[in-house]
Length: 150
Image (cartoon, rainbow, N blue to C red; front, side, top):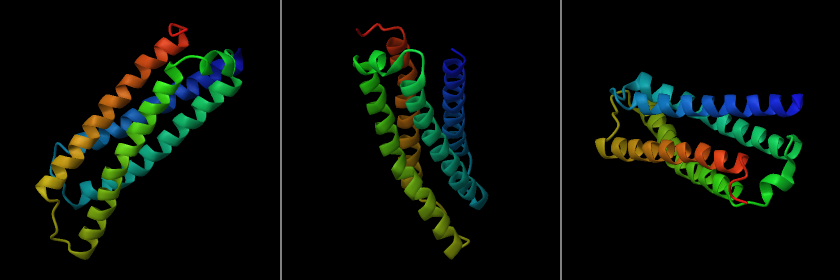
């Protein structure tokens, strides 16, 4: 029981951390994308990636070592919907990550360089899609945890 509680706590904690970094990226887009903001976006995005990896690792640990076990989770559709949503968020996040790297490199080559408005809008839209899809994952988790999809 203690192991299950600890795994649940770790999983929930890294989920909150993941959302914190994603929301921080979105908040930065409300202001000017100056050189400081562009560098910060790159660092936040690395931490966001790390948090996503930790969410996946703790989720797998809960599946394998948690009180309910794989038999409970793998027989219903919610786990597959959660994984699909998680994968979709991850795939969508590639675009902004690549752009953050490209922006930083452009800035290193030319200190007067600025983010084109069309790119800024496209990345902001991707971040908003990410956060909205990610927000659906806990809903599916509640359905899964309560065995409502059996």
